[in-house]
Length: 346
Image (cartoon, rainbow, N blue to C red):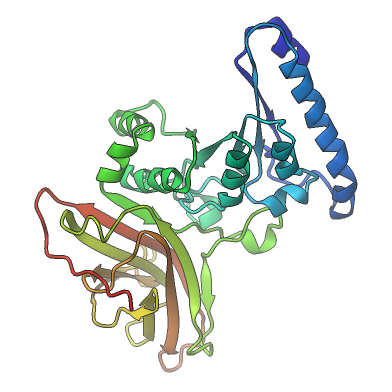
């Protein structure tokens, strides 16, 4: 079938899909090492067939899993495929996980592909909520959430972007998002909402990469730092004259006002930043709280950031753990310079 597509039609490229549409592993752990050379030979044969056709060139690409470990566990030695010059592009994805992840761990693949003069196309998952986050229904990203994910992908060095399953039929919002995908300048200049990836099924799912959320903090687990890493593309230091405000929002289940937390951003406490509280859910109003910090002194930085949550004291008589379910960082730009403090590097 691949030979027919490559030789009998004027196709511009072929794409082999190793991302497993069903989401489940296709190999047992003990069989993966023996399959690595077999699958490598298979890809090599297809590459030779595609490149030996007459006439115009035909690119060969693959859809693979996001991390190198996930791929090797399924017999997919993607690094060797690129080192041998077998591929022109790769798309890192996993069909069974559709929650928008601005920090999908694909730096290894970008470096490997670019070293082989090949391309990587980032994936933009279609939802911010579904069953994997415990939501009763699917929720599509806002333009600000999608813009943040797009900006992170461009900053990481992808050569293009994929997305799918947008709300149908496409409306004004969807068309606006699609317009911005291919224009980094539009993306960087717009408001953004960075969401931290989460997967309530990750503990029981060996075929998925780890996510920072949900994060559970036991009632007796005091003074322990619980890390939540995230990445942002915005140049906060270089754009502070245009930034109107920066907000950090954290949704914590079972949090009550008597609990005492130390929340730190890049090892600086947020205790002196303004914090607004509201209900954690529109359905279960008293099941937790949203904490919204107006960041004026402790600011995030372009690139990698580290949020840490430390339980100092649980309310008397409460023994249930706290669960950090959502984290968002919102960067808003204005038409005029705003007074925005710059965080000290120390």
